[in-house]
Length: 129
Image (cartoon, helix red, strand yellow):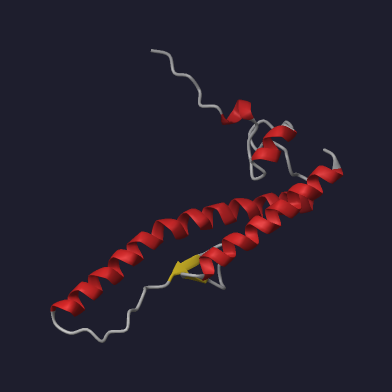
């Protein structure tokens, strides 16, 4: 694969990684023990409310937290795939299908630089009735 293309894709991956980490930092804390793990922080409102207003505020906290969890998971998964692609670039195995070991087409990598499989291996197998 062309070195210039690899460098371009590496730059894009690194930029995407920084952007995802910035997004995660807004509502989650990085787990220092695990490389790609983040923990959503439970939102804490000011707590000045009392009675039914306090219950409503607590419900809002739970709702916001439950909304952020799938976002965290999705961003973590994307970050994990980016880190995997960057590691493959580093060791010289970038752009090789993990299933058939053939080269992934450059067009696919330009569109989806974290691709782990070629299009043939990524396609779902047709089942016969």
